[in-house]
Image 1 (cartoon, rainbow, N blue to C red):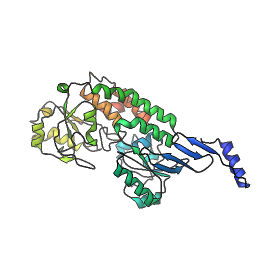
Image 2 (image 1 turned 120 degrees about the vertical axis):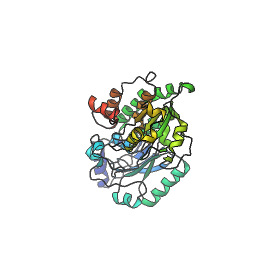
Image 3 (image 1 turned 90 degrees about the vertical axis):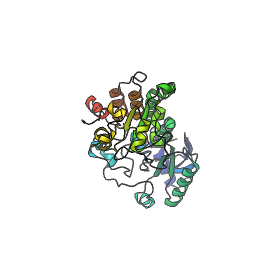
Image 4 (image 1 turned 135 degrees about the horizontal axis):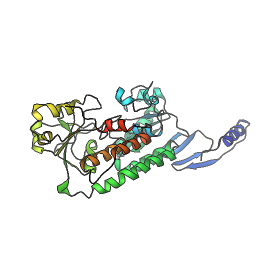
Length: 359
């Protein structure tokens, strides 16, 4: 229980004059002594972690950075991406200015930055839990684990809201998931197999890298009721398995989804649309090639974080517009306002949603 300012002041004075006062309080995540500087929580991996009562700074990995930004645009101490000017347009300066580019494996930098907590989001496997415990022991900073499973984002948002004392904001974000994600997930399960669109997810400089079904990087294709045509191995970590153009021709997808990196030049999309080697592919002949929106973060992937929420709605609408007849301009504006603290205009929303270059 967080004490009122007057009560905290009174307790502090009482201690200074030598009186011993013990007051036990609690919060939904754990318990703490009211008026103390610490509280004990149970993170989403079931680990007991002692953290500051009020968290004012967070070192974050790439996966949870979007979720943290949704709650507080200034609380992170590190950058995990180098943002382009196009992307910065939609981000608060407090998020990226004056912060070093430091990733998850830089323990010395973590110690130097002195955050209140280190926050990682991943699958809650024994290996990841063990790594978190080892890192905490090494840097002597509390390490908190969140679940990065797309299907568990409501729990993750509620957990983060409790962690940062932003319960009302958490309820607002969870409501978005309940309004747009939950119903669409259930509806996508009803699509007959013979009606499912067959998708090739093109990545890399020339569109000849991909992630097959079962990869976290291509998850939304499966969830939105598509069929990932790639029949190849899943590469651990960042994925992006090499494939040949001959393989793509054999798979003969109905639609090509293109990730060109978060860059305005959209090099992969241009390669597929203009290179003679691609032009006899049925999807290219029909102009069934679609650049995935990426501002200010990739909508399908890169990284596989909270940014995928808007990407899931977009993809479902793209694949099956009759089944998912969303007004995507309105949905994008709602998402950006709630999660990115940016009030999109209709024109900006349409530009982001229809970012295909003239070919």
